[in-house]
Image 1 (cartoon, one colour):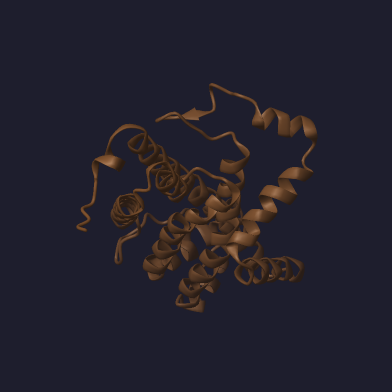
Image 2 (image 1 turned 45 degrees about the horizontal axis):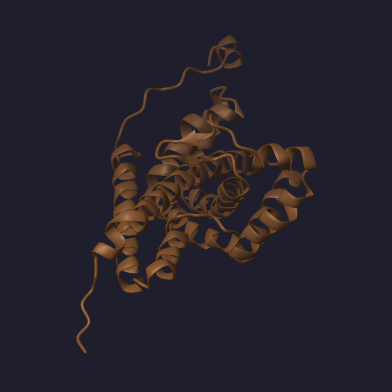
Length: 258
């Protein structure tokens, strides 16, 4: 008995709609998760570089917890435990139908699954991003920090204008890898019923038993999305040797003639 793949079984009708929906959902949750992870890692960097023992202890605990527990377990915790602990009125509001909370392609974002997936992916990825950026910071000569402080730079200006740009340049490729991992790890959110690409591929298999065709198309879509996001980060990311405009010293430094 000869078997031939039936691509029409996944590229037409309802299966095609599921694939498009899953692809867009994966793209959106990857973007939202990446933005949240970036904000979280900036906060963690401020705490770590503050020199405060309590702040350093908080960061160390955060990194230890999120790097050493499985992401799927974390997603299950946020969905079944943390979300379930929210006030009932909040859960009813999130679970209600909101026409304004729909992204292009008819993808709703104000749902328990989307919020828990984006939040869980962001927290998990931030722990790894922090260590990649720390590696870049370690490559910066200590004299630059001391010189900036002597010129009147505040801690925030020091991080924003001196340390972070150089750290990102030194460690940009590993950082890109962590953002791409976030996109790929979004497939684990199928464990909480999140209808991303892997979930939709599984649904096609149950719908018409086109497992090979569905997985093949899903794999190509993941590859395309990874190449797209990787290309965007390469184009808009920091370039080695790029020059930045010098930051003016703060008022305190200017008053002392620095």
